[in-house]
Image (cartoon, rainbow, N blue to C red):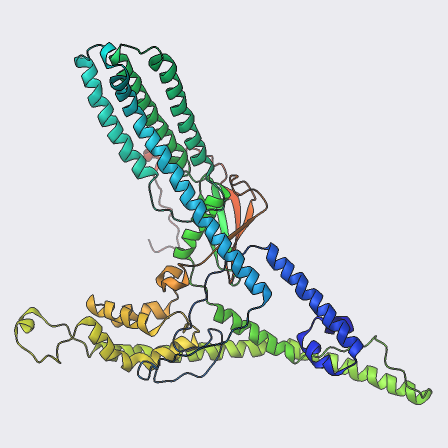
Length: 539
């Protein structure tokens, strides 16, 4: 018991009134545990996204605080200062976050700089091959004939095609920052660099040293370089784009908190690029992660477990100074009482499923009731808005009667605000929708002549993460956890995790089996039938 109380916060603070010796031991143990945690936090590298601001007037996403029912009418802006205490572990974590962010930015700009330098080297090399003979030994060059001048046109158009192809394939906005380098892209860059260096070495040894007079041969040499670069670009298209199109693996993605599962087919990809594809599909296919619903179930389970008391029947009881038959009787009575309490706790545990059933039934009843009120309120609010026709727009009306979509949304929003707020609080979606986003969505529906049912669909059915505000997904950081190297390809039975702040995605890869199809021919003339008559039938 002393060992357990050493690591509990309550016993640490409540035990200060006890002996100084125990207090010293507990404080030293507590200090050791904090120092171990601090050292562990310094070794781990975690990039945390900034927490989302509480919406709909909630001071906490997970809390059950009472809010003003006149939401949308009595909105108050509260400003002030708050005091936060930072421990040494928090300071170390913030410092490491800054260092990691700076390192990622430096790596991204360094790779971009290398790509630009390599691209300039590739496009300037053919032009340099054509220009250097005119600059170094112009008097020794032979006259360039018609065929030579035609090669100039070929080089120009091929360089233009290569420039557009490289721009379309490589110079695109990055979708994400990967932990490791892309192997195929690095190999292509090394191949291009070795190829250009080899051409330069041959040009320097065989043409510049001997000052070759055949300018048409020099032009053909530059044309061959451009042709080879075009073939390398074709190889890049095959490795970077076409190779991954054919499905080869079926991956199962499961969210760790609520068990929601999706299946995707992927091609020959590395683990890190497969993780990127899964995250992109996650934002589109998975419903938004609502931590408040999970917290409600946990609090309900904790409430049921709080009433259970466990007694150590086989444990030793404290010794009493008196011994004899009376003491034995007291010990037997204590044993019987403990067994009775354990039996009562077991019976209560068996009835917990009934309590859970009635709680869920009551919650569903409340949701249906709030939903009906919300549908009626929204339909009544939409009846007060009417789009002006063209002939009505030509007539002069009072300035107060004509409103734009934003003003119309603000005018009818208070009539539905209370019902919408109660429904969102009942379904625990209040942190997913702010008042400003609801009014923008209402103005959008009014502008496009959408029905009340179309307006309510965003709130009655939880949508994907991208449907909600940018603060819920834009700054979210992911961590890839894999036993195998992230640059290696997917394999049969490969398992890796994608960790986020509140949950993680467990990914399991299965190879798509080989399918053998056989053909069976059926003669169309064989479709002939005979009517079977019986005495009991009515035919």
